[in-house]
Each structure stands twice: as C-alpha cells, then as structure tokens.
Length: 145
Image 1 (cartoon, one colour):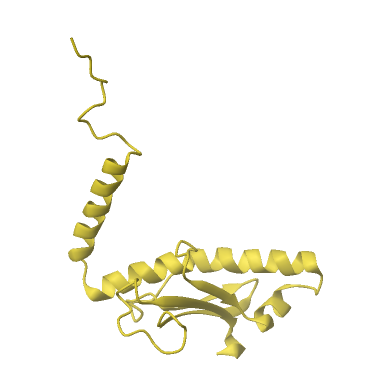
Image 2: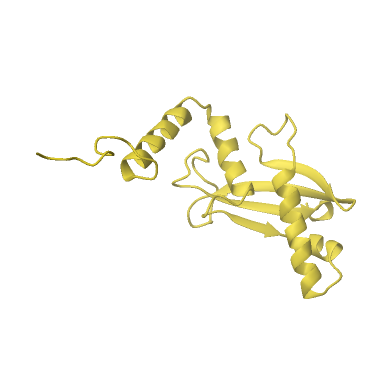
C-alpha cells in the first residue's frame, strides 16, 4: 500500500509550479495592455522603487531647499521627497506617467522618468521592453528643469 502526501498533484502557494503559473498569468495580462499602458506600468514600478535596475536621483538643489544642512535633515528630506514621489498624481497629458508636478512643503517639484539602454548611454530602443531598458527617475526642484 502506497500513501502519497496530501499535496501531491496540487499547486501550493510558494512552490515553483505555483510561481510559474502566476508568471504566465501576468504575461497574459501584459499582452492585453497597450504599449502606453505597459510603459506606464514599468514607470510606476521604477517610481515606487520596485524596479531593481532603475535609479532614483534627487537633485542637490531640492535637497538643499528641504534640509538645514545637517546629515539628519538631509536623510529626512530625501525620505520626504521619495514619499511625495510615490504619492504624486499624473495629468492626462502624461499617459506614460513619465512626468509629474507636485509640491513638498510649498516647494514646487518635478518628477521625470527617462528610459535608457542597458549601458545608460542612449535612449532605449523600446521602453515597453524591460529587458533592454533602464529607467532613471529624477526628482527635482522646478528651477532644475
């Protein structure tokens, strides 16, 4: 008499088989998105800090406005800036969600997402393809633009 484990043949959460099926589902959903929606979703991932290949830059001008020059206030200013960038909203004229204007403590700020090739030398040939694109999110004071 052979006794099989209760989970044999079933997909369990956290197993390789379960992860593969979720990935396939995600790919299927991505096929239904337009090119603009795909770019917007990838830009959101970069802005939220979920894209490990993306770089987030905060300009020194903006940090100078938001801090008093001490290391502690510099770190707090950067944290406030990143929080504001994560919560900013985009206008309809930015369907790829690559440009936003917002305020932090009454200081006007811009957020810009640029898409480059893997070496950060040239613009990306296809910003909708995450495998060949690196994103740079720049958060700046309005004067920096």
